Length: 349
Image 1 (cartoon, rainbow, N blue to C red):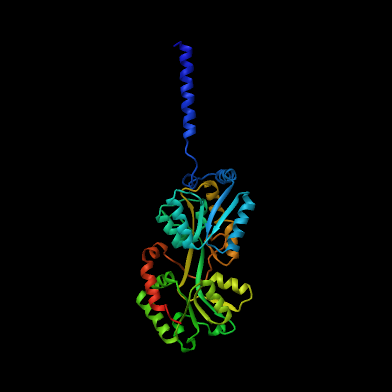
Image 2 (cartoon, one colour):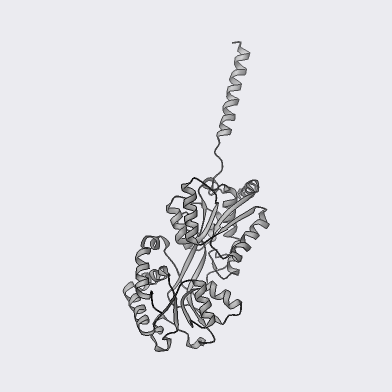
């Protein structure tokens, strides 16, 4: 082969090798994008999300709250949000079934942290490191954990203000041993995580003995559903709901219901888990949404009476020592605590 022709052949081979390398370059994933840093990070996510065009989110957050957040995201970035809403257990089942069928549909999940922890254990979630982590409460992120606590729901006692005067409301759980509470207390049927957390702080034998005494002396109306319990408190059918969600009471109060919230020590908070899926089909949009919900979206979280985990957006209440539920511990021990909870409260009406 002539020297000139040989040079052209070599050049062609080199060019082909470069083209082949470029073609083989891995596509962006939530793993690579979840580690991005630098001044151009946000713009790169925005540009990529706009090219992707949409994002799919699985959520169990009440629709008015989530719709407002996703609407604000769409307006800010021009990226369409496909929202699938279900109960946390439905989300877990759906995501696991899709993964087993090798169907990668969802980009982001936000639901009860126990179910998000279960998704992590299935290997479906991608750990990320975001610049906003520096602004979150310490309990929001844990090294090696694939999910972030995006908001907190606080357990408290809700009472009917037409039936119970503020001065007469209990100040401690032990106050509920007073005979005046006979037939006036209700409790949600499935709050074993709350019992586990209080027991871990105060000692399980002491806590369980106290609640057994309260039930034996004054009874306990067991109802299923946190929304239902607040409705029953508002109607007066259950004057005092022992472990209701603070945001449910606040929403009912805003609507004019005669309800009020008190916090009995120790104060327990349940985290909502937020994560990107490892095989998210829209990885730029997924990481961009995580950024958004942990920054601008936190003001909308607070608007709906949940506690944001971004302390720059809303500091923790100065007078409240909040204990966040240890979710991995609860996932490991939930069968035990469900049995113990039901042994104390179930069937009591």
